[in-house]
Length: 213
Ligand code: PRP
Ligand code: URA
Image (tube, protein in one colour):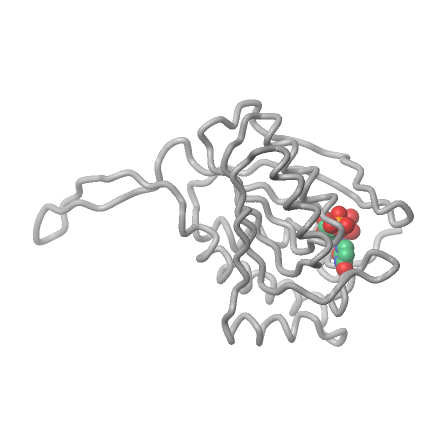
């Protein structure tokens, strides 16, 4: 697995505001959107393109366009949905698949409540979106769905990751033998006894969309 941690002052600045407990939901959503645009630039560095011949007002020239099959972007609901706009803004022709997961707050195991993905992902680049990689159970479960559909090239985009989760995720993708890149804005210190990232930003879904019982 290839890990890329974005080292950029603008990312650090926006993350600081995102982490702040005083940041309200509308500002939080806007910051996530801005951060994803910056992460997406790095995450799509290896996106496949194909040569294309075009005519400018002055001359004929060769350029590139996104190759077929088009990339698949997969937000993990709920919180990953907050990252979708920032990603598809950069790749408007990408298609979108959905995986809905909720982590049991006692066992920390993810439960999948929704899944809408193309059956065959062979030859297709997949971009998974989830702001938080804590224990790695949710992201790992999603990548397993993609591997089951023969995806062989996956890039995961997260805002924050815990070292424990990264290691667990690394072991899973090694076991699945799937080429994986993980792009994160920051690697935090650790998980606490409740499975939350420290210092983290709290519950990303709640901060984006409000608390559900
Ligand atoms: C959060 C987060 C990740 C998951 C991370 O989702 O968005 O999907 O927890 O934890 P893990 O790495 O230990 O699996 P949550 O289950 O709270 O659901 P939500 O997005 O609906 O709030
Ligand atoms: N899920 C979150 O939303 N935040 C954490 O810190 C851990 C899991």
